[in-house]
Length: 109
Image 1 (cartoon, rainbow, N blue to C red):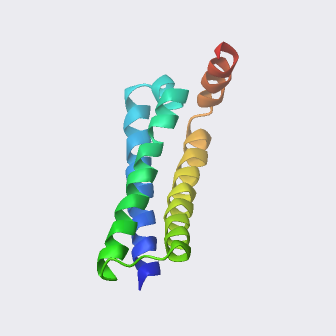
Image 2 (cartoon, helix red, strand yellow):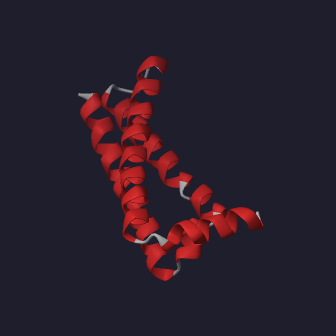
C-alpha cells in the first residue's frame, strides 16, 4: 500500500518539477538552464519525499521504519527524476539552441 503512495507522490513531484521548468523555459531559457534554478528545484523533491513519508507514517499510526522510509523516499525521487529527465531530453530535442545556451553558461561559470 505504501508503494502506491510513493509512486503517486513520485509522479506528482515529477509533474510539478516539469511544470516549473516549463514555466521557466517560457519566461527565459537562460533562467531554466541556470544552476541556481536547478538547485532550487530540488525543494520540490524534498517536499514530495517529506509529504509522502509523513502520510505513510500517519497511515501506520506513527510508526515508520528506516528501511521503509528509505525505500519509499527513493521511489519518490526515482520516479520524479525519471519524469524530469524525459522532459529535459525532449525539450533539448525540440529546441537545439538550448545546448548553445547551456554551453555558454557553463563557460561563464
